[in-house]
Image (cartoon, rainbow, N blue to C red; front, side, top):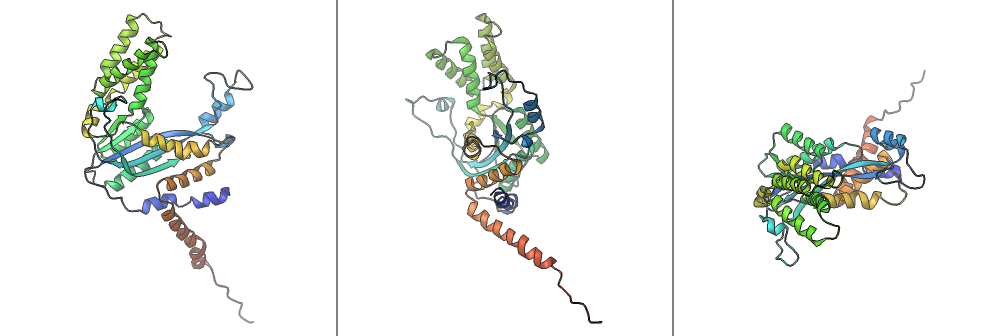
Length: 339
């Protein structure tokens, strides 16, 4: 079964390299997004750093992990997505609307395409994402937006690809990740469960959506200092403030909302769940290099809605490999001449 699965996925890259571009309206936004999800691997399939960390680990307890300890069994699968969106302008109040407010429908993705790999690092996967985006917009006439969760290596790889291809790509950090940092800071100032914390987070989220990330960071630091919090008690506040300051260039939500761009990574987060977690996290599973890569490729093809077309393509390629190559390379038998 492992061999059959690996053979079945052998032509996925060639299939996507040969297909034609999908149709979209000229004004549609072209969105790129990347993320990663861990897969529990067999020991020999771990990357070098993870394998060494697992070998060097000295857990405090034999039966379970203590706080902060990791088993060192996972290899990150890199997931990439490209999709089109009809721009829908919104305001900060629309984004942070409560359940009692009138809801404004945000932009919806269409022509979604996914790619994934457990063997490749993030840079080659982002290269594949840019290849797909350029297939859709070879002349670079559309607005390109890259959605990330703040991982600096991902940002660096996206910027390198954009620079090398001479493409103007605006990178936006997912608002949901920003909100999590705000909540971490909130618990430095409020007891857990205090309803005032929710109002505090909402006020600062609105300020960030209006372009005031650095001002919010400064205000968080001032409050932590004015309340005389110890270094350990203000750690969450300082972490949030540092994050907002360092990532401020990628928090240009006023431009994104005015242009009708997406500001959340729900598409790629969902892909990490249904491509990786739902299949690879079965109890007791340990994956090999080739087995994980084959399943990832087949799940991506199925999620893209291309499996039937891919299977016809794959069978044709198999026929060429098995029969046509054999026929053209076979040497005819010539009986020896009589003496």
